[in-house]
Amino acid sequence: MGMEIVHELIRGFWIIIPAYVANASAPFSGGHGRIDFGKKLFGKDVLGGGKTWEGLILALFIGSLCGWIEIISRPYLNPIALENGFTLQFLTINAVFCIALGAMLGDIFASFFKRRIGLERGESAPLLDQLDFLFGGFLAASFFVPVSIVSVVLFIFITPMVHYFSNYLGYKLGLTEVPW
Ligand code: CTP
Ligand code: MG
Image (cartoon, rainbow, N blue to C red; front, side):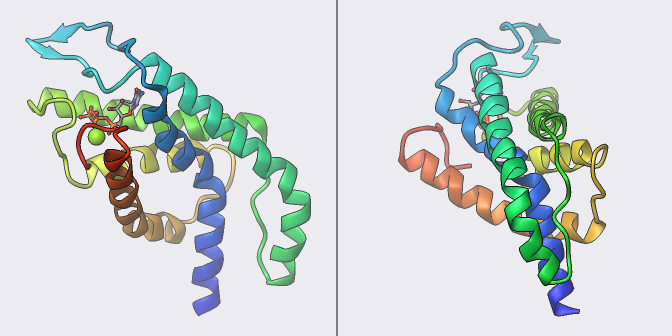
């Protein structure tokens, strides 16, 4: 029982890495080219200045790159998983790209929603800010590999903590404007 949870944790991690990495990479772009082209909807930014093309492209590139490293590592790692009674999902370049894209679309959707309810760029939306990319990533992954509900639930609990910690680090390093 206990080990099965650990297996689901590892399997969840395996498929969500490209999403995590993509989401974490975007702030490093230092991008300014707004995805919404500065357009407004009913007087409010469509997405806001925190969603840039540079950030999106860097996220997709680095997320896919890490996914590709997973793909080439699987022949070495999966036998170890098998010895322990589970398997690492078979990933393709299409799958990892789509997982990274799903994460970034989830993040964009969250910003769209935040602007609609009147929150400014960078203003905190607890849980939404932390989970947007995760849902996008797992949803995209589900088109390619089996995604267990257990692993999704585990990551719903883990991610806000990781996200908060990494954003705090990013804030301290001057990459994001606010610590969330
Ligand atoms: N970022 C980017 N392009 C993206 C996503 C993120 O350039 N597509 C960069 C921005 O510099 C952004 C930072 O990553 O400020 C952190 O992303 P996020 O927390 O999602 O944006 P916020 O600035 O908090 O804006 P929002 O309120 O819209 O979430
Ligand atoms: Mg934010």
